Length: 225
Image (cartoon, rainbow, N blue to C red; front, side, top):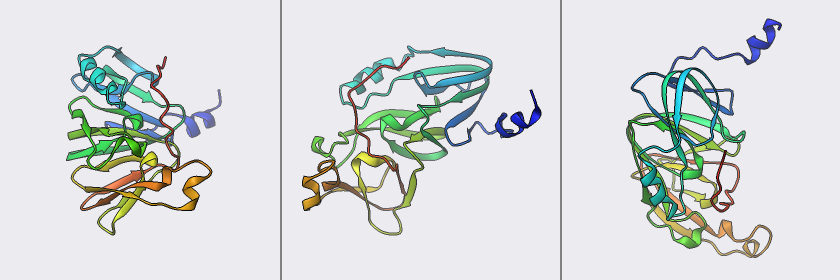
């Protein structure tokens, strides 16, 4: 095999705990004592000695989340080596929390450090009629997080101006923002894809909102291999 192939598509030399390989894959540097929570079925490759537990103790918490419609099927990865994760070719965004908290649509979670605190929490100001549901996954503490987006996302700084987001396109937002629902009635809402644009969430305060360029149709819960 000629070396140009490895030069263009070979492993990146970034040694951070978590990074991206291209736009569609997350690379995680695994080490003993640094367990990882990852979306079940998201492993595409690894080097080294890494084990996966699809039935972690947190399964009870996940079972409770299913009742809210915000199910997050997770597995625990342990061991040492380089782990590669992906979710059906979606774009991957990696960020590091330094004591902050992030509220995330469960469908957009790819992986996060097991040392982070997490739970299913109600999104204030959102009703079941919004299409987004009432609950998100909130991550808190110090550690790395990998999110997915259906296409390249935009990150909006809520300090600049009040920010309004279609609930079906929302990926994540900084916890602590002021969140207010907003309804808009317009003729276009009666045709085409329906009335998704008639309900938005308004955000204000110190933080950011991440939005994907695709509305989440939120299909019924399904299993992955």
